[in-house]
Amino acid sequence: MHCLIQARISSTRLPGKVLKKIEGKEMLYHLITNLKKSKILKKIFVLTSNSIEDDKICNFCKKHNINFFRGPLQNTFLRFCSFLKKNDTKNFIRLSADSPLLNYKLVDAMILSSKKKNYDIFTNIFPRTFPKGQSIEIIKTKSFLSIKNNFLNNEEKEHLTKYFYNNPLKFNIYNYRNNINYSNYNLSVDTENDFKIVKKIFQRKQNEVIELKELIRIYKNITK
Image (cartoon, rainbow, N blue to C red; front, side, top):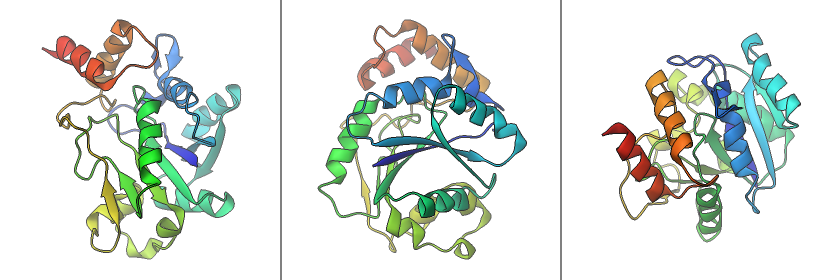
């Protein structure tokens, strides 16, 4: 199964965030290093844009021997379509590059669980019970490519899976729930304050891979 990480430099609230460094390494580096521990993921690709700004992401990928693919900046849907038409994969995982604390064990658990289900999209955000920054979506390629670009509004073109969630009766959506609702917690990086919190979590965590309950405990201590 291919893992596709969505990344761009031109983030509205915190430009260049995916290459901002924590403990001397880029956020994107932390995420990919974690994901490489998975024994299930076959290939990891960074899907970025054709914008000249995103040359920085491509150069980062080249430096670290990471697969990457480029497509439209604003129309993320077409970016993924272009990739999927050139790369054969029955299903793919979509992740965001602003999630350096994402645990590969959660990715593996969802992959294994998804194999037992019939779905178009297997997600943990509909509704959300995991924190932001632990979001995972496993999508059937055939179902994704069945959607036509001219069906989508601008928001659905930019936010890859929005069309699925806006049309739940058209698709078989399976939601993977956490046994504790952590939906109010944010472990992703969207703002400068988010980045400062995540940096502090990295400084305090004892292991490279940290379990969710421990992440939440550290987060609470930092933000109280």
